Amino acid sequence: MAKVTFTQVNGHVVQGWLEKLSKDKTCAQVIVKWYKGGKLRDTDLSEKVCRKGQKKYFSMRAGDKHHFNASDLWVGYKLS
Image 1 (cartoon, one colour):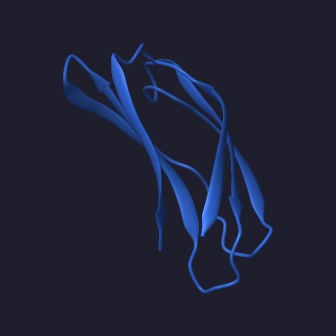
Image 2 (cartoon, helix red, strand yellow):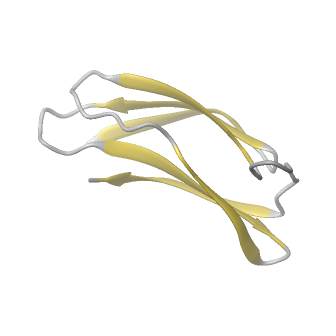
């Protein structure tokens, strides 16, 4: 189990932190999918958190070399 706290979410940037809440053998990671014109344009992953109480801050921007203003985005986290 993990908790994601967002401090900023918009078409340019997603910022916040991810904290691992449970003591098990899984890791958690934030995933952001950036869309423009109805098409997936970029996908970003945060650093993983694996130990209970571990917290990682993240700041992700739409686009890698050329940043853009996303028309839509999907944000979640995955366990592995």
